Length: 400
Image (cartoon, rainbow, N blue to C red):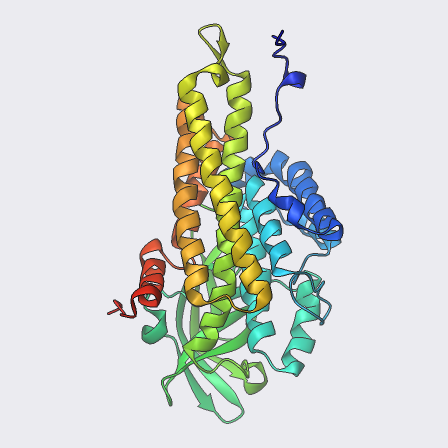
């Protein structure tokens, strides 16, 4: 006879890893994943709603993050752990499962800022900048997006760079730059006025002519401190011009890697919303019994779990392509576009399951719903990623 015991101890735990994709990791890598999960659950989750509401960053977490030893996680040498891109994806997923702002902070620093130096820097530049960034002693930002440029960065950057002897003069603005209000350095992408090519520069944030204004009144990723950067005759030595960053193709190599990370991050955001919703459904009672026993609630959970599991599988294969060195722009774009669409659906269904309680921060779901909107847009909108994939599969470019 089936048991009627529905006490919390007898109920299945909320587990978004329905197909056990984490078992594809080695024991050592899985230990790192679990260490990150414990940090996020024990240190971040209890305080994050307060910081989200106050539009503030929990700086007291940085020393604890340093002890995780995951700065520059997928890079070899220069004080970096030298782990796989697969593990980097799982770490992004675990972070976003609790809070997408913390995962975005980490992704901007490790993926975009450190990634720009690792992929495009000279040996001297990598040796100088990557070790303190890997230790989280220096925090980096990534300055590509501009107030009026939007998705047209490949050919329309308005920020300019002019060679002047052994230095460069930068002028322009960058918007939505995470970590810029308090970090130590920013990778600035600018158009060389002499050859019209996009070039990259390591700019220390205390450089004369570099100023940052915090962007306020955001409805998403409120813990991330985004800045509007203004560059006015900002002089940068040529030693800080990224020697391998001399066209937008070089920028795209960084974006390709980071789009893959954002795909994993969006799976984490969806997973966190699903697990909160499932735990809520198991405890919340209506009409004398837990709502988890209702058919419509189980259908919502089925849809959420299907989205999560299918996008986990997509990201898993994408990371395998990365490891093999055969991931192309269109592979990363398909994952980023599809995973964020499925995330958006999933967090919406989670909010629906909670009814009015879904908009209360104390239940976390409202934060996931809001933060998903930022993940849906940054690192290339769905429309831009669809055109990258469309060009690859049709042979025709629909870009204007």
